[in-house]
Image (cartoon, rainbow, N blue to C red; front, side, top):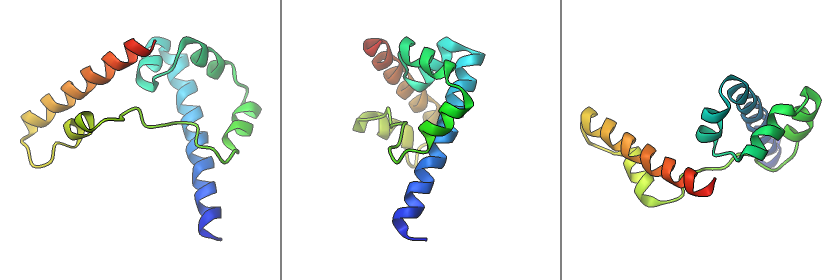
Length: 108
């Protein structure tokens, strides 16, 4: 198997895992799922309604369906927090979550 084939297989596996996780989260708690996944109401509705065959078809594509929501250096720094104490680590993660929540509410 070539490196390209392996990467495509990993993308398909990631897509399937992501779609299944998204559907489970949406069905369990729609509002929390929208927040955690950074989804709009329309996207959450569409994902919740996908049949297993549609999930498999979407997952089989070569384009990664999920993306990193952390796109700036400040949040990455807060999340990685190298060499700091456990208390400082918890505070940094909370700060990062607050920043990301603010960005989600701005996008919604």
